[in-house]
Length: 383
Image 1 (tube, rainbow, N blue to C red):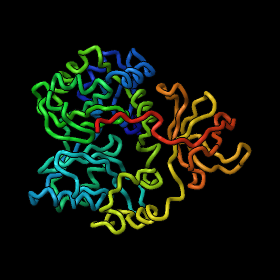
Image 2 (image 1 turned 90 degrees about the vertical axis):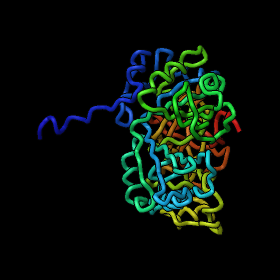
Image 3 (image 1 turned 90 degrees about the horizontal axis):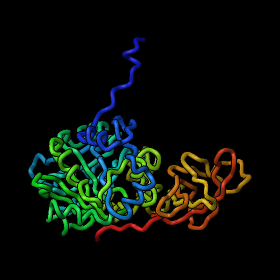
Image 4 (image 1 turned 120 degrees about the vertical axis):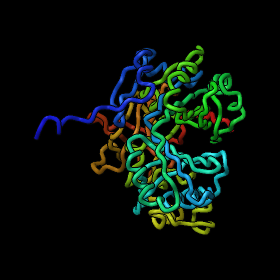
């Protein structure tokens, strides 16, 4: 076999790649892209700066997709998407966004995504590692009802933190009135953008879909105030972990149901048993049964009783000397805002109650931890 066959595919670059380099970003491969894991400020300070002020994240590796109903009726696009997700899309008002999951026939999660009602079409943001499969999934199942347009010509920038609204309002005054999960068109620095008041840190903030050609200029303008610092993947991960938010792959996957993942809050009454449009999505029989009867395992928060971080995929045990593994840590690390280790993972439902003691195996030692409620740091969304 030739060397060219074995060579890995070259990493893709976002429209902000040159800016990352100019800011001293330490670049690493992530979901097929060359992405900054941190900047000279360092992961710990980047994390704390976002919690205290505002951080700017490049999330342009995410997929952006437009579903335009062939009938011209947004209701038809919503009903079509409901074939693939357990969420109430028909009831999503114009200008609002909703968290959803693509499910499979076993009730597992193919990907999680954000869905916005843009009035005459649906706007989707999907995970970078899944976006090609998500596009194929949509085309295979919704091509009869929707035109599916992948928006490769747009970047995605996240501005997160308690000063995010103040900073963005200087470039886009209309965004100040937005509330959590609002989404719609706004002029930002005179550039037509799609702005949602949402994010992946637990803080107030925005995600800004901007034409790729304008992304660097907008990012530089947003970084100009002292309140804003560039933030890499390292701090993005510790921020979302403290916020109790799932990362697709480690925390949710094709064999994990939304109920097991403690995401049942995202499934509205209309799609549940007895609802106006109950079921009708892949794996509905399994998911609806788990909603009624409970799931065999649950995603829970975990707080170590010592100072050593417990990371995935550490095995979990009910007793310190138990030979049989009971569960698994899926995400974990040091929580800078708590000044303590934090983690999440899956345990049998019988051991999911807050306060339950478990043991994680770390370097051939059993470390005690306890089931704890999430988020580990209170959410600060603008309601």
